[in-house]
Image 1 (cartoon, rainbow, N blue to C red):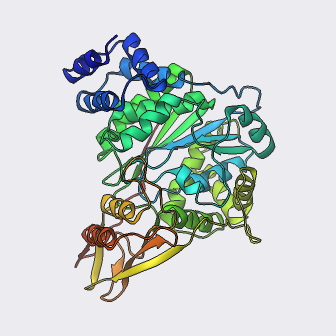
Image 2 (cartoon, helix red, strand yellow):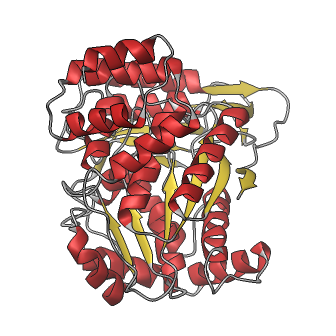
Amino acid sequence: MNMLELIEKKRDGGVISKEEIEFFVRGVTDRSIPDYQISAFLMAVLWRGMNDEETADLTISMAKSGKICDLSDIPGVKVDKHSTGGVGDKVTPILLPIVSSFGVPCVKLSGRGLGFTGGTIDKFESIEGFCTSVEPSDFKNKIERFGLLLGGQTSDLAPCDKYLYALRDVTGTVPSIPLIASSIMSKKIAGGSDAIVLDITCGSGAFMKDIESARELARRMIAIGKLAGKPVTCVMSSMQQPLGIMVGNILEMQEAVSVLQGRGREDVKNVVLTMASEMLKLTPFGKGKEIDELKKLCNEKLENGEAFAKFGDLVLSQGGVLQSDGTPVYVDKSFEVMTVYAEKDGYISSCDALSVGEASCLLGAGRMEKEDVIDMGAGIRLYKKIGDKVSRGEELFTLYTGTKAPVSDDRIDEALFHMQDAYVISDSPVTAPKEILEVIS
């Protein structure tokens, strides 16, 4: 087969056969297809799309590009969770310990940040010593001993997706429904989980900008799950504004720990408790229980300290370092660059997630290019969010960088511009947006 012909075929709106997709996946995996042709094909897919059959063929082929984990010897239903990405999304570090504390085995395969959205792997690697490179052969042992596991993609696990994931990040091809669906589901199939709950974020700070696109992605995910024999539940959550008040790797982990200790904002807890309840619903423990009852039980795990203790088990089991109080030791510290204050009285009517995410990237919390090294201490703290009343002179936000990676004044100025653009103050009261928009299963 000829890669140029495949690019032209998809560019012109043609349907790619299963054999052609397998050829493409092999070429990406063994590096026989150059980056410029892979990028051109990805852009053609972004432009022309893929039908359900093409998307399913791409998903299965990417999953089979490496090893498929077999966790069938581990008792119980293994549940995985994934988010399509967002700004300030620190759900996973809170969610996994909650679900695991019920005795439900949790296998979470995560990725790094894409574009303006943060990545779970990057967040956990902000903890001193935490290792996300867990070989598939070690999955069973860790699940049996600790009940939960968080890993990145190893060279053996969906290697085609790992390469495409990094390339999509820097070629403007992230917001493609077939590419998002196949990327997520190939990892889930390869990871060996029995059931999957997906957080499909929707809004300016997500790749799905509207609820119709989010529903279409959910439909694709559920269809692939049926093909693979894995039940899938999709939770649509709002990304109109960042989740919580911290954006950045160390900053978000600190906020996650605060929630695990029984504190934290209600918007973060609402998303976490909804996701945790939907995960439990797919297990024998949750069978026959209503979602409200499961949410109450999950919240008790936060209040009685069981979830925080489980978080400590996760950190220690993967080489991370904890202080005497059980909180993580981080690889850097966040250094305050500047704080900006409100210029008038009013109500926050906009705290645009996309603008905040772009500002965070400029400060160093995300990657502008594939080879960029993340500044773990960089990020933003939000003091006011949509619906909050604000008085002239009150704090709006603070910009941070890490102590080990100084950022140029130009980048800081550009980040400041994005943040000032993110905030709008109105004279009339504003209603805060709902966190959970819809649940489809």
